[in-house]
Length: 341
Image (cartoon, rainbow, N blue to C red; front, side, top):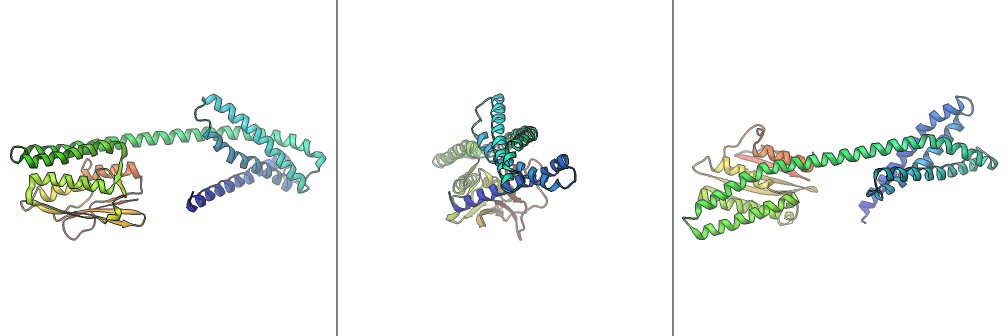
């Protein structure tokens, strides 16, 4: 475990301790009012209530999460019984520790220990059991909600990807078929590239993210297949530093941007166009850029457009930590920038 992970875990543990103590301080106020009103015993009652809440709360804070990890395969009813038994043990230990602390600071004598322990344990039981069961129910609901959101995101991502790949594979297959009667040797090369694309498409169903080097290989395969249709009208270059080759990117993200440039900057003009694919390190993330010398575009892409679909895929994978600038600022042609964590 490296130092960064240790520091992160330490900060999380400290935050949980401070939150528990803060809740104990707040809980001690109504307990003090209930048992002493606002007479001279208020402060002592508040301090004792805070000590009970802190001791029992801190034990529960660190014991219950560890217990939750070990009860995953048990039935829900069995889990409730185990939690109740563990909470009884935590209350017993926490009440004993608090009773000893009260004696140590002079708020009670040792002869009153057992009487105070019995009273404190009963009060703690009345407060802790409902609070713990409520917290467990809330945690379970949050877990189920998180799981439901994850499944919904996965389904949305699969739906979005299914709208991207058939269109891409259809165009590629048409290019290969058109070449077969004219140049069988070149057609074989194109079909090999298409086979690699199909294999990559199947693998991407499982991985979602792929190394940038693999995505670039697929982009080049796609462009070489499209060059069968457009010949010298399609020109491209790839400017990516070798050190970024292993950075993970969404499968078919760059290909989608390149296909968009082929459609609008090359296919629509008799002179064709040039496409440039580049990548730049941005802090711990990466910026991917696809630009062309075509007519460019303004405004957000309409619903169902390739760029709009890509934006939906990015949201499903990264949430709000990825950005698609379409169009990105450019002096000539079209430029689309993709910023990934």
